[in-house]
Length: 193
Image 1 (cartoon, rainbow, N blue to C red):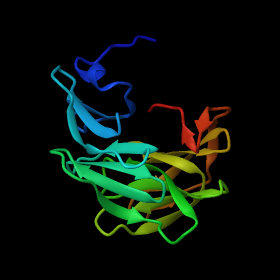
Image 2: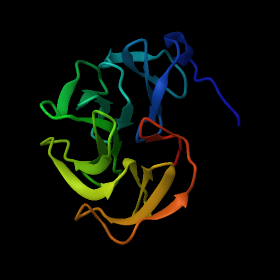
Image 3: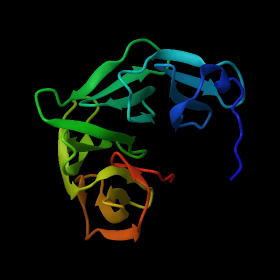
Image 4: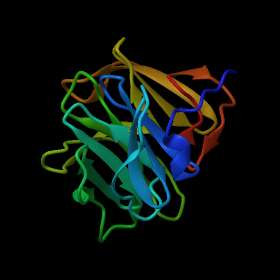
């Protein structure tokens, strides 16, 4: 594996939860209790705002927002900075969000929700405008939509795949295991696509 330091990014300490901007020009990351961006061609990192209580997932969307998951809340912050606003909340329930992932070709986000006590997790679609959740009908976590029209997600220690109808927000077929014994931490796959 080859690693490369991003000029300027090391000034913020240890970054985590990396996300690339949709145009590929910037890296977003969490460090020092803040959400930061840095131009991949160089320059100083820019602090956008505070990162809410230890986010577990970050995704950068084409709508000029970065979305974060922290416990029972999905929030967003504009790429110009400022304060975070709540997109969806599970307050008053015994559930937490595990992840949030943008769907490049659609207006929805994919997410997973789990009982706070660590029980089963379920895949959901999230409307970022209304905050509404739609059940996808699959048990699992950390969903990722592929340009091929497939949905990848974690189930146990396996990566599952199924054809997915993005318009109906439903699987179109029977899920199959495509990778066994994948590292999954807190319901999140240790896997890059």
